[in-house]
Image (cartoon, rainbow, N blue to C red; front, side, top):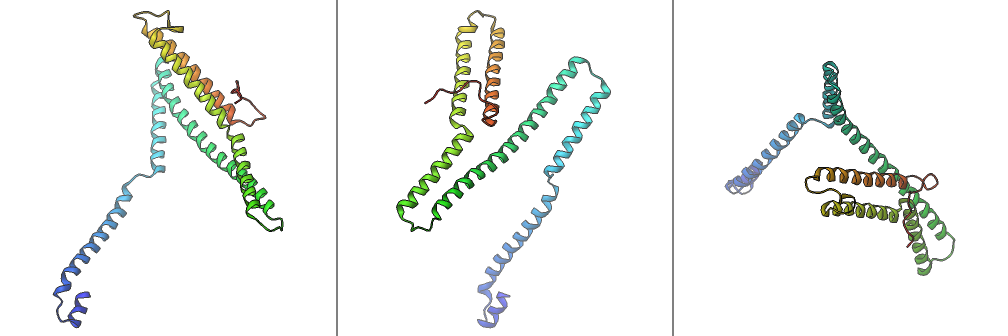
Length: 230
C-alpha cells in the first residue's frame, strides 16, 4: 500500500520497496511467533494434569505393593518414603494457612490503628503541623507495638540463636572429642556420629516446639523458657 501511494505521489516507488520488505518480514515473523507460542502452549502439561498424574502413579504403586505383600522390613522402608510425601504436604499446607492468617492479622492491626488515627484527626479543630506530626507518630508507635506483640520477633530471635549455639557446641564437641564424646576413641566415629545426630535432632525438635508455642495465642501457651529481659 505504501508503495502504491509513493507511485501516485512521487512516481518513484523504488525508495519504499526496501522499507516495505522489512516491515512485511517483521510482521510475518511476529505472526509466526504468535502462532508458535499458541500451539506450543497446548503441549505443555498444566499443574492440575501433573498433580493428577502423580496421584495416579502413587495409587498404582500402592496397589502394586498391596498385591506383592512385601516383608516387614521392606514395608517399613516403603512407609518411610511415603511419610516424606506426607510431611511435605503438611508443611506446604501449614505455610499457606500461616500466610493467610498473618495477612489478615496484619490487616486487622493496621485497620484498627488507622481507625483510631482518623478519629483523632476528625475533631473539627484546625490542623497544624504539630498535631499532624503527633498523630502520625502515635500511629507508627501503635502499629509497631501491635506487630511486636503479635509476631514476637525478640523471642523468635532469641530461641533461634540459642538453638544455633547448642548445635554449634555439639559440632565442636564431636570434632574435638570432648564433652559427651570424650569416651569415643579411634575407630568409634560411627558411635560418636550416632550420638551427635541424636542430640542435634533433640535440639531441633525443641526449637520446633518453641516455634509452635510462639505461634499460639498468648493466653493458650507460653514458651518453655522465656528469653531474658533486656
